[in-house]
Length: 139
Image (cartoon, rainbow, N blue to C red; front, side, top):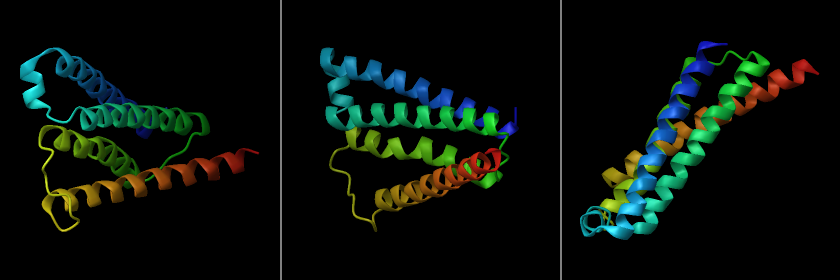
């Protein structure tokens, strides 16, 4: 197995662990006044949970695809996939805790989210095309 596959599997496991912790937070918001004060926007917390589940699945799927097709990708693609997968859901988490966060593109939040989306796009598009190329060569 290539090192990139192993690193993606570890990152996917981290995202899954965070998703499970957030699932417990969702339960807490429904049952504890303290948790309702911490997470003021339930819908945003739910979006963070679902986004971490999605990112976990994508990381693990690409880990398996890289291993199956014996794809070696640039460490930059792997780093972008991991950074984007960890950072994207944080936006929802911030909005769950502080719903009044300024979200304009020029705000600090907007700049971080733009960087995160850019990293995610570069990482997953690079990964997708690397797998597609390897799959075509395998035909």
